[in-house]
Image 1 (cartoon, rainbow, N blue to C red):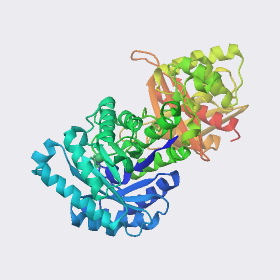
Image 2: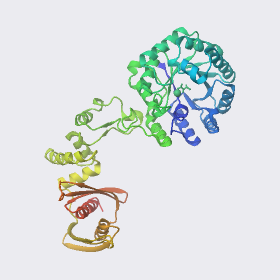
Image 3: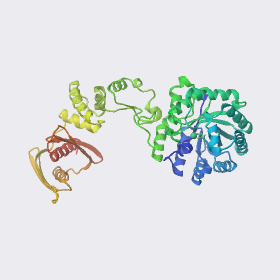
Image 4: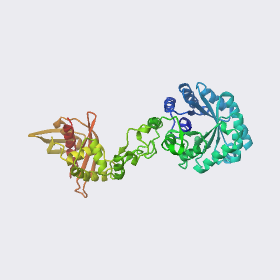
Length: 502
Ligand code: KIV
Ligand code: ZN
């Protein structure tokens, strides 16, 4: 198996994307995680671009011992000097110098001839090589550059001492077949290229960054430039987790190995989300919230019977705890039964039918049915929940000019207990009275009302969650009067608290 070098640019291309900036301390923490996970090269920043960038690279270079630290530099001596200065403390360092090679960049951006650009590239590489043993040269916008010119410039920089040749798809324009053909062309045509490492750096403007990277590796590239969660300029870079897990999961196709300890991927991804504030879409491959979640009944049935029916890698292989069966309107009885089992309820098939009918009614109204919903549902449907308290009577005085005042009377066994209380509103007043009667102070964490039937006399369904001693309890009540429905919901939640030990 050939080794693929993983070059991570989360701290450079990733961090330079809108909204992704990190503090120097955060960059150092990320660098520690990157080296621990087994990244070969960490591109830590662009030192000349700002004092903070310089400091970031410098601090990473001081901290990380195992991975090579790379810094970016234009083909200018002052950039290379600053880059070298920042990298100096690193035991293994690399200067990464770049200049654009496509006609469109030469004409409109650089306003230089091909000859001028070639000289800048060669001089920069030679100078960088006088400082470090590892010099990477990138022909920016390589995929839109003239092939003959690419051949010429790569040949010249190899002679000047470049050890790694990067072929960036800067604007995410290429497609897998074309990119692979370009790599094969360079491998064949550029003298001395076999003494260097060919690197690929793909942007995701067409959503092809991972596919392009993988195809280029098959064609002979041996370094993949990636970023965690795929963050980077515009649509981002090839994603670290996608490239690494593709190589691992489809080793039969690629026959490559990396040094990455994939079990640390999820933690790394979460760290980047929390440091940058850039969340990943729920359906993002590998690290998205739904990447190991199953809702459809047929899929849940398959997963329960054998995980590999619908999972091509294990959640544990990237450091996630387990796959989840999301209970919603598409779920079936198998998924429901499994979840009830996890919650400690073993139900007969007759009871399961009963609970399932009620479950589908709830699932039609809610996006996801949570454990607390299920517990409330099963306890009610199967009459598991003892009614420690029941409502006997309540009244509330309220208005825009009076302090809302409630009187509530509850029955508990043979006892009838009455209390009065004032509150910020009528619901608050009745809730305070109920808390006094039951001697159960709770924190109301959520409250919602839904019309259960239609029309002006619609029944109102009130669902609440309350917190007691760091535990969450759900309560549900229905009545034509919303205050009464609220009263029933709290009594229901308090009965549940009693049932669970008070
Ligand atoms: O996308 C690009 O071309 C770059 C280079 C600096 C490698 O990020
Ligand atoms: Zn880039």
